[in-house]
Length: 399
Ligand code: MN
Ligand code: MN
Image 1: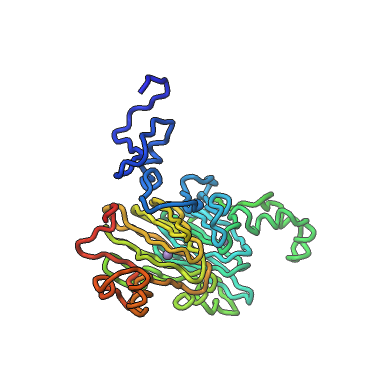
Image 2: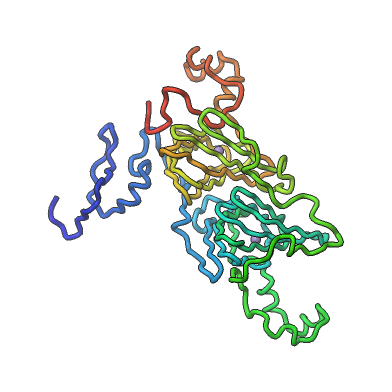
């Protein structure tokens, strides 16, 4: 190359947009080599990728961090990932004692604790309260409009919140401090039957997240409730749920059938072992919103009319699959890939390509695809969500 002043050097391995078949040419820059290393299937798409499919990936690392005394939050909504209209995600961390203030919102809140422990509180429309401590793998669910709070316990905690509206923002919820700040003192006096002096020190605006002391043990904080507790628990211990085990990994499905309060959001926690693949499938009920928890993987989405596109994912990424589009996910690393599949639905539902073919007349399958007994006899009538066959490698690019 000519010695231009902006020539870059210093990277050990610099991937180039050149495929095995020779298609492509070197990229002499400008370029972001770190990004290219993280997105090998964007730089060199599989030869079967084609056409225009909108972006189906957004990293929480590319979002605005709302930093507060007491914790932080960041979110992936339609503002970051425009196609993701069904659900929005918020990633939040609270310090020991850090409080996500008493608030409520129009959307349901589904959550999973990723690291550490927190205490949640809520009161329903019939005056029944709920309080619980949640740890790694525990879920909680607040129906729309139900007021609640979250507070970090002794250790720092981090969790994912999912809302049933892609336009949601956690920075725009109905907060107790905000309402107090925007209500005349004489109205507060009339409402609570106490003098104005009782409100001399109320916050002047929404607090959102703030630092407080670590609360005492759960039992010491319980408020006796003449109406009892909520009839359906707002929490669920997902990791205590026995997983579906298949060759290649595990799946834990949670929806209104085993977490009855969760009538608006269904989920599956999927583990793909190295070399394993989430089988070719689609969902007949709604779009899929994904959150990648650990490991690395790639997903290819098929969108009809000869279009297919592959994206690479890693911890902290959000993925998305429009309703009914075919897709599969491969583990591209040497450790398990853990991710969540989320749906705005009361039920988890998927259609397995393999199972569909196994339960269709073989002659018809043959006439469609020109495949013989070698494939027809291997089809499975039972669903294996995660597959791994001896002698095959799910990745990279085996043929
Ligand atoms: Mn909330
Ligand atoms: Mn899926």
